[in-house]
Length: 510
Image (cartoon, rainbow, N blue to C red):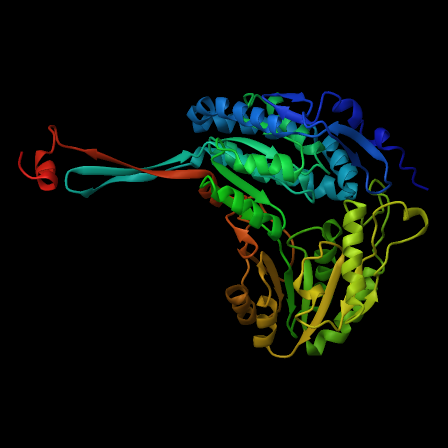
């Protein structure tokens, strides 16, 4: 039998973060809120470490450090910033196993997932922005008005205040930090208090790679205290938030008071549309993988499968059978496919959605927490639900767990209409062997990403962001620079003497 060992055996976090869980001006410090918080292994309930939460004074100190570092970092050449980020990527690669183990421990992710997806994706993203930092170009000069020459400067905004969620702590730290600093900004990031370890490690790695103190700062506190103070801080020029739509609305409300630049990546409820000419085996495998990735705690996870009626019954049967083969277990065990949810509170939230759905739908498989060896962890079995109405809670609301609901449709028009009949628009997929059907789906599905005959993969070169109540703005890719830069028009008078005729036009003769 696999012997998991203790949390300290897997990752000695208590020793590593003995100096605190705030990273300000290049060093770890203790929080000043007067309250502590425990990071818990969701697979066992064992405490990993305890730290002092950030208070408003810590946020003020972090913003001050970022503000002080901004002029020099913004004034560095793109080549200098690029070189620093290349060194950063190399440090991350050297510490890949350390990051994978820490991410697995604090989130409950299978170690094979963090080794093969979370950590390599973060390193690749860092390498991408190291190169992209050298391509922050404005627009070529031109004469658009008489003897004047105009051109466009693309400039950093200033201090960015970012808030990241708990489902992908390392990757979300990277998505927030990298485009901001590559563009010449400095940043204060607030990770979730549930999962701060890899964000702190990320900031330390940046310092070790030679990125100047104060460019990247981490404050680990609650959303209500540290998060809201960061968003409302008058010296923060931009807020970037990833999380639920409900909290995103609160962030927008606070940011409005100081007219901040705002970037929101919010909730999702991705449709998975299977047309009757699809490769059924591929669709079933895609649905299970897409629904259960990260234990379903993914805003782009496949949550609503719409299957054209000729394939519906077989799709349900085969999907349920495949779900039942998924192996729940210790995240550090080699054979584990699915780990726990991030916390007991999240497990109970997911269970509540499923239990309420029993009143109007049918649970085909799953729908319960496992017993036996896994009973002490925040586990929940992969769950398949059918016979739900389109307007029911389980179809319309974001569950954020290992739950897939399947609904039938008859015509192509109906399938696309049902897929779009949701407040969210982050991601979607369509499954068909017909190029015309597939092309129509890419055009008519209202989502920021549409996959064809696949679901979930992302790449650094392409943007990620939503439509509708899934927010606005893009992470990753060169498009993210639009979020973290501002445009300035510069205009030169090319004549050797002052243009008195212009003044005469405006003011008349004097």
